[in-house]
Amino acid sequence: MVAAPPKLKVRNVHFNFDKVPKHWILGSSIATNFVNSMHVVFPEGEKFFVRSVRRFSKDIKDEHLKKEINSFCGQEGVHAREHQRFWEVMDEQGLKPDWFANFLKVTAFSGKYSYENVSKNLLNRLQPNLGDKFALSVTTALEHYTAIMANALFYEPMATNKNIAPQMLELLHWHASEEIEHKAVCFDVLKEVDDSYWLRVSGMGMATVLLWSYLGIGQIYFISQDKDKSIIKMPIETFLLFKTVIFGEIGKNLSKHLLSYFKRDFHPDDIDDRYLIEKFFKDKTYA
Ligand SMILES: [Fe+2]
Ligand SMILES: [Fe+2]
Image (cartoon, rainbow, N blue to C red):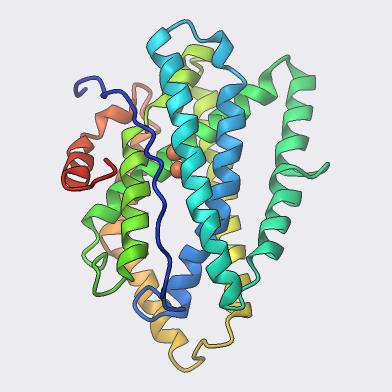
């Protein structure tokens, strides 16, 4: 295991989204709308992470970890705000992000019959706090996903200013860096709350279904709203996205690091990648 992570820092950054082209990744509707889906899924997901981890902060004895929970919530709050600010641009582009955001809220989070409410109520009835612990476990698994996606982004050869609008690449790299920076917080909280291996891996099962289903639904929705997509270019764009995500550095990286979560003695710091953040923040005025 590598050295203990440094104290987290909440960076109150504001990004400038002026003149972002409609298809800001590789000029591709398919790739851009996949990440546009993330602009909606991430803020709602991050609010869920904050609710899930805050629920247990009073039970945490370790003072350092208690402080890290606050900084974690601060960082996720700024992430959610900046991704949500981009909705304005998406709205101007005719993508109507509010509809998908509302669908996500009602079915996954705040609706009476949403995933969050139904699973929490059912499991809490089965065993006191089990629903809250499961929500924390799903959060911990999604945090593993964001950390390994972040790691993969730094190794993806296509992630350059040439292929991605520079201000959007900066947003993605900043978010990725902070995901790596705080990758162990929820994991350490879950470990202190309930160290069960099965609780942890079942949370990963649910997280996997939720993440890829909603990202896929969002992508299809935004493509359907995109009046400037080229039907002729779409098969090539789909091939390129699959090539990058499944056979490229992102795919190789994700599968390798995803499987490590199933080791009984896994800890997020086993993946030694904090040097990536140092490298990224080195010349940033907001670091
Ligand atoms: Fe985040
Ligand atoms: Fe995170």
